[in-house]
Image (cartoon, rainbow, N blue to C red; front, side):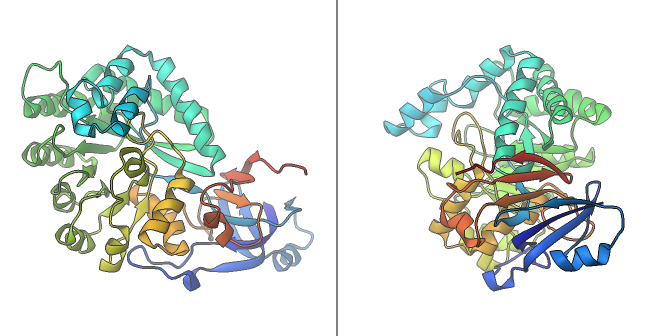
Amino acid sequence: MKLTGPFIQLITLDKLPLKGPVADHELEIVHDAGILFENDIIIKTGDFNTIKRELGNSNYELEQIESAMVALPGFIDCHTHICYAGSRENDYAKRVSGKSYLEIAKQGGGIWDTVTKTRSASIRELQENTEKRAKVLLKQGITTAEVKSGYCLNVEGELKMLKAINKANANIAIDLIPTCLAAHIPPKDFNGSPQEYLEIIVKELLPVIKKEKLTSRVDIYVEEGAFSLSDADAYLKSAKEKGFDIIIHADQFSAGGSKLAVKYQAKSADHLEVSSGEEIKILAQSNVIPVVLPGASIGLGTNFAPARKMLNAGTSLAISSDWNPGSAPMGDLLVQTSIIGAFEKLTIAETLAGITFRAAAALNLSDRGILAQGKKADMVAFECKNYEEILYFQGALKPSKVWKNGQLIRNLILSS
């Protein structure tokens, strides 16, 4: 056993609802707190000195926290595209010069530009790229991150990407959750219709993924220039029948994808920048987790998803970085979360919930995102005296310590 503390504040995120608004006064804040865990599981949280007295002379390790720190659950980035090769700075230059995302894609940029570069990369290169970016996430306090394929758009290449993600996951401390996004856009070099391409993915790719246990999650981008509602409907029906969890890139530039997410009981509907009252109402009546992606809005210069309206209507709300080489190259979840919180008037409790246990729910994970008995000992600590400072500094305040599975893997306290 190990006892870690004392923390000036421990923000457990425990006993909060999965859906709807959350006021800051609902946060459970333990002062002068300790966390007792064994291996990678939390046994108890509470007053540090009380836990220490209760342990008495029993055999345990003491991990003393010497400076004033606030501890929270490890952050969860539930939507990323960090497995890729190349970059797209030229796309960005065109966007800020006035070209739209869809115009750039039609001119040969966008996702297809990354596809050509990723197809040329070896599995080793993609593994190393993914590990490098995942380590950046870890420094930011992110202890679990989803990673999508979708930058090869053929059977061989998508398998290469998923294998690279799994190899990276086995090689680093952060948990990487792979997702098959072979249905990102129709490949330009495919001699057939979008529906025919999806049929090949269903027949030739998904069975191999299932057999080799590369992922249990299937995603599709429903949008102009990607896949239509009817194409997506048939594809999702087949994926669901094969036992895959469903995720949908929905309502980014045009609405409709969120309705499919509800129809197929998707784990999450991601983007939602143009979701209207109708879509929000449908999502609120379902168990689908809305995932908003402020990084894409910042990168594209578009409106944020209507997060405040969603919560007020009774939906859940996860917040993710969408780290990708095109629309969201920043890859800094805490900065993006702070910004959307300011624009959408999210409480600090709602914001923190969006990058912890609500994000875990989007990944169908119930064992993390909360600091409580029986949960994974994934934690971050910030050198400050009040949890409100973390978002107040809008991402400039970075974690000083990060624990994964109870192990201190990052110690960044700087001497003055």
